[in-house]
Length: 305
Ligand code: PSU
Image (cartoon, rainbow, N blue to C red):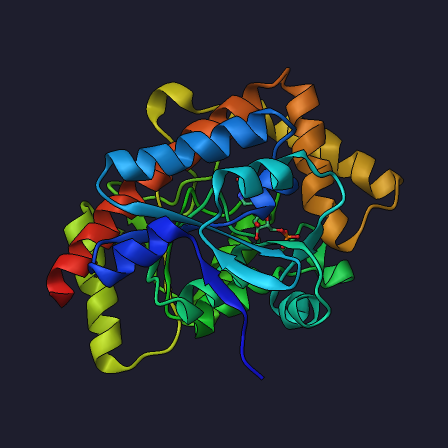
């Protein structure tokens, strides 16, 4: 059986000319932000990547085809739909095989990027070990994916709604390089710093690209997680957010929210409880990650020429 993988015209011509491409996920559009800010942000993120010399490839499944790079009307239609499936490693193939539609999470976007020959992917925050995982066993498939699929993922760390110490611990166990950019501690999504020391620190895109290429030369499976702190002016200090996150978590628990619904529920409640400030921070950090992703992809492409 052949995989119906459709590149946008822009992505196809960039790859034919060996120009840098940065993958983007679609779950952040369908489940991570409310309409119409999701659409506006998705367009701005794509534009930011172009302004920094690379080509964006937003990934989604539409009518059973794996799209790598969405045409503007496809992105718009996806952003307006409230009923799209959230696809991870477990359900990506089934969705394509059955002719369905779905948005790709970090894990599914990494799989698609690798299939399309894209080595760098920018997003907001990865999934990880949920709080209370010692009872629920709720751990995102994003972590396993980083251990097995060779794509460098630029994020502002893992989302702060998670159990961050356990998330970092698990990535260490899985042998995933976790690289803080320009600081010695790991960022915490909406906040720049956290108490967790960074396992690796790199200060520029060239170093990150070189480490990515060396992993390839060694034939190591798995990717790198680049933990890029949110810009100073856009952050929400961790102390301010902690009680808000606690309240959202308590509500999720009281309402019996579980599995794939947990992260979208928490993001929406934190948006409401911060009067929209969490969304502004989320948008700022995604744009920041897009810029760094473009810079890393540019260096990887230059080294491969
Ligand atoms: N980054 C954001 N917002 C999001 C996500 C990332 O700024 O909503 C999505 C990604 O698709 C990630 C998913 O894979 O959240 C994690 O969901 P879960 O915790 O259910 O694995």
